[in-house]
Length: 193
Image 1 (cartoon, rainbow, N blue to C red):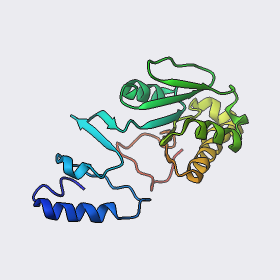
Image 2 (cartoon, rainbow, N blue to C red):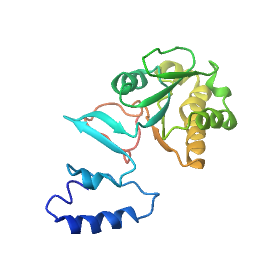
Image 3 (cartoon, rainbow, N blue to C red):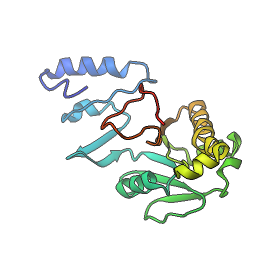
Image 4 (tube, helix red, strand yellow):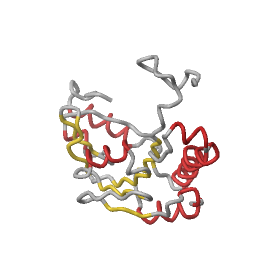
């Protein structure tokens, strides 16, 4: 809802906010507002300035798998001073101020649902990001089972644990399912190659 109360009087705003606060808590409503009174009933408040996340209240706890890949490193360096980030690492390590790390065995395929659940529950994240993936095309073409296990099975296991504990889950997928001959793609297109 973008500045939806900006032209309302205070009493009407209170009625609308009361209705929103009484809605089903399993849905997410994004409210954009400059009025602090509108933000008082929100579970999370994110301050964005010039397209950049400046602060989060209360500080959001994020657990990220695939933290040493291109997306993971970029995410961590962009938000390490705004979010409470725990990075799951295996073969490589990452050392950034205020970022905790969890070392898992170098063979992430050996992680079963119970082990993933222990990692996730112990850290009590509000959001789990999965950016773990095998991305070397030649390796993936030659090691199809391992690629499927990491790029599909692991994501499914993490998703399953998050769903069971009502934790938000974000999966960052590869761009390698398309030739790259179009500027914009969406999930309704058939993959190629």
